[in-house]
Image 1 (cartoon, rainbow, N blue to C red):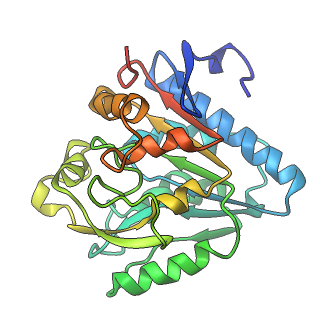
Image 2 (image 1 turned 120 degrees about the horizontal axis):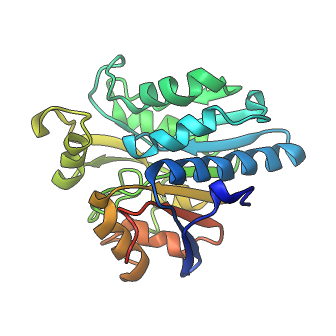
Length: 259
C-alpha cells in the first residue's frame, strides 16, 4: 500500500512473483519500505492476537529501521520480534553482534512484547536447536530482509544455501566474500576480525513467512540484485529464491537497481 507521493517508486516491475520497487534515494527507499512494513503490522494486528516478525541486522537496513521505529499506531506489545542470524564466537557485548544492533536501532525503542535473540554461548549447535524450537512455535508473519554482496539471504551463502533444508536454523561457515562485506560495511576493521561461523535461519525458514520485505541499497549490491532478479533461480545466488515467494517485495535505490 502506497499512502502518498513520498512512498511512490520511480519505477516498479515484477520478476517472477517478487514485486520490485525502485526509489531515487536510499532515504526514500527506507522510508517507503518502513511504511509498508508498518502497514502490514497494523493490518495483521487488527485480526490477530499477535504478530511474529523476523528482522535483518545490517547497515543496509538503517533507514528502514529508523523510519519503522518512528511509525505510529503499531501495538508493539503484541509483536514477537526475532532476527535471522548471529555470529558464533563473538562476545555478548560486542557492537557487531546482530542482537545488539537490533536492540539499539529497533527493539529498545519500540519495546516488542517478546524479543527472542539468538545467543550462541559456548555451543552454537545447541543455540541453533533452541532457536529452531522458538521459531517453530507458530508461523512467521513478516520477514524484513536484505541481500548480501554475494547474493546471500541471512547467512545462507552460495555453496551453503539449501532451498530444501530440513532444518529451520543451521550453524554455517561463512565464505570469504560474505566476511569481507562486514569489513566493507565498516562493522569490522579487518577480515581477520570477522567471525568464521554464524547461526542462520535457513532458506525454508525465511520463505515460510507470509510476507517478505527485502531492502537492498547501494551499488555494491547491484550485481547480486541483477543475478537474483534475472539469473537462474539457484542456490548459486540464494536471493533468487525470492522470485518464488507469493508475497515478497524488493526495495531498491538508484545504486542497486538494474538499468
